Length: 160
Image 1 (tube, rainbow, N blue to C red):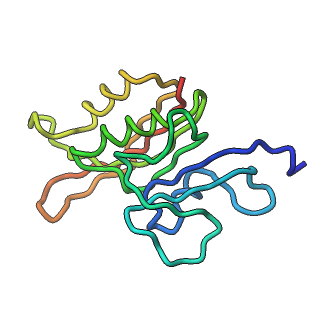
Image 2: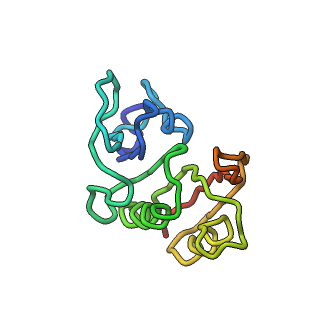
């Protein structure tokens, strides 16, 4: 039965949390894990023992051809006005049609400032992409050291 499981290519962006993003997104390890390749992407390669392949890179410039990945995960890595759109564009570009993404992002809660990439702007941007089953939910919020409220969002979707 295990041999009949589909071969998949799974990417975890920001692997420095030792692959916890993969468990967060439901990627299993062990005998019942889907056959295929699981890759951890991080700007700095880690000297750790892991069952996952590690590569060096950043979310805004994924080192994969178009439509090659089955699933992409990330946990508390994608955030800030400069990289959210670029990283999400790369996620959509590299996912196969029907491929899924499951990740968290952090955005500032300040809808009155035009230069802040907030939740409503993020949702508007996501709705322009070729996605289905889009879900954006608030996990929690907190104040950072500048006293700015940061909202943590869980995002999941499939590529059309």
